[in-house]
Length: 450
Ligand code: 5AD
Ligand code: SF4
Image 1 (tube, protein in one colour):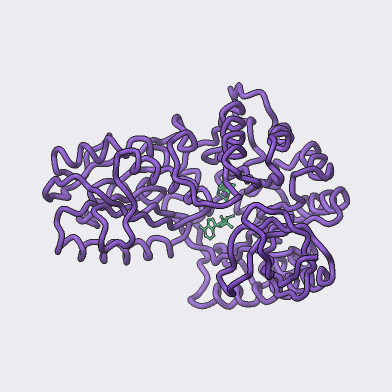
Image 2 (image 1 turned 60 degrees about the vertical axis):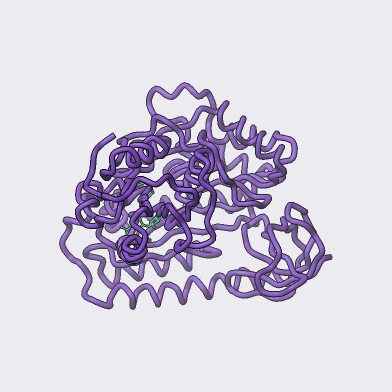
């Protein structure tokens, strides 16, 4: 534990918490564990930040926008705390780790900081803060305790995440993840399978194996877990009650023939691969340290598509990497056309402190990133629409997730390719239903039970 600044206030034991998650799936996964730890301490959920004794922000540091959003929330927290000095503020997650040195000085309303590898320390940190009134924090550099093994308050529903890999050792030059989440570590297969079996017993029907780089599972030196990633997928499929298995995110360099084989087998492993390309230009890919070139990526997509003809392929793309020229950006546009992605998460490059790319020259002028992004999104949406229009008229398997937010009497579920479908139905969450697709947008469908 590391002592921080001074969040002085009266030490009143909190009865209720309000928890906000800002980041990726891993962040949401960890948020369920933070709730689990707090509830184990006898602290219950509050309906709003205004009525809570304890505010917890589980933060993200992947792009700059996340920093400014948190700053807005913390200035509101500071105002609430002025009226109620006994209120406690916890900042957890990646930003707590990456900004630990200045956090207490920049945000005096914060009482506890806890990095993503130290969530298990949260109860002890809270006790310490209550006992002596000074700001306190914990920040481990690597994963030694798995947040996945902590108590959890799971968001209800038939789908659950299961963490299999923590951290990342790839050091893509733009990315802060290896700096805050530490080196890649694989979770023992026996713990993973015990969690999957427990989830299935609770009624979960679909699991997503989760990690920054899932298909590097078991590859770090010294790992004794005894399973490959493909083997783990097969074991998860064998668990009674698990109807669908997904995984997220894969690095192209770690897609093995064995993995392609498992995808082609047509068992519960869904034919959806999220395969971040980041760029379509070789010079930019090298500057990003992605370790593949465009031809290598396209060749991999070709092998995947020939083994799994109805594969749904999604990706992440960055525009405006330092020094990216118009021609280099156009290579990303043409890669999207060539690979015909079903959808893509698109990002404007955001410099992150401590990363290699942050020191590179060639920052794009104001507005240029936005302009490229708009052109990229146009192509991504057109292709999404073409893919989805081509599916209209088909009958597909949908796993019902919840009641629709748009219309009474309707439910929302997903195809095996992870595309949302809304349709009128009395089916319950967890039911697998055959649905005829009637209408499409670039990202979703309307349908009717077949
Ligand atoms: N700027 C913009 N996008 C980024 N990503 C990661 N770091 C940055 C950054 N500094 C994107 C990548 C990654 C996704 C999770 O976020 O596309 O795959
Ligand atoms: Fe970041 Fe690259 Fe690791 Fe993904 S693979 S988390 S982009 S360093």
